[in-house]
Length: 308
Image (cartoon, rainbow, N blue to C red; front, side, top):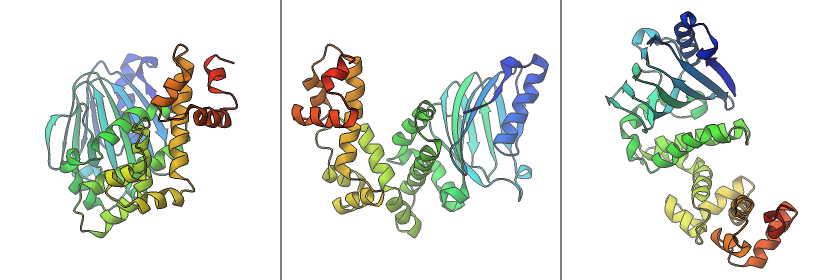
């Protein structure tokens, strides 16, 4: 992570200029107006080539991108943003100029827009270059007003909320690749299904979509290929093939995820029985759970729970 700006470390007369310079240089050429007293704490992560995450805690300000800001040298990218708190409005293409807090905001940054923060707010945004995304600009523009209808909407919203908290635990490039695949699937899910690129995107992002679904349903006992295929509108064979393409096995992926969950819960639940925790994570056979736990972590579940 790079802390781009913390205005609390600057003299008050310099803060507004610093906010304007930081936002215009890390987004794209835009007009930035900042209300006094200017306050901002802006963090930035590079998630591999062509993928950035910005976390902005700031007071009132406005970004305005007009046709004069768009020229041949403007980076061709999109933004998927999430205003987490405060009061945020955006005018972009077919979207009404309404309150956007808690809603995903898809923006084609090759189009004019106005983004207005009206009070102290927290906003996260992933910026993806079109070259990395691999989708036509028209696909993104068509998806802007339809985004809320996507079955991927809540998944992406949760993903953005959790992203900053896991960046120190996983390789940024892996998170960037997964984020790009999920955004592609989000856009494809609200596009006309008869075109060639939505079909290609759906096939290419199946592994990311299925593994994200598994992570949200680790405790469910029926988390197998048949359920995953039905949830994602594909065949059972396609589910197995998606894992094979990544050198993985579905059953082992599910078991490892459940073991991680049980590992965390055992450490924080000294009064609970090992069998009850194992059962809550989908292990019906305590002996099987104990054997897999020891193989994964080098100690028995009981030893781990007791801190040995």
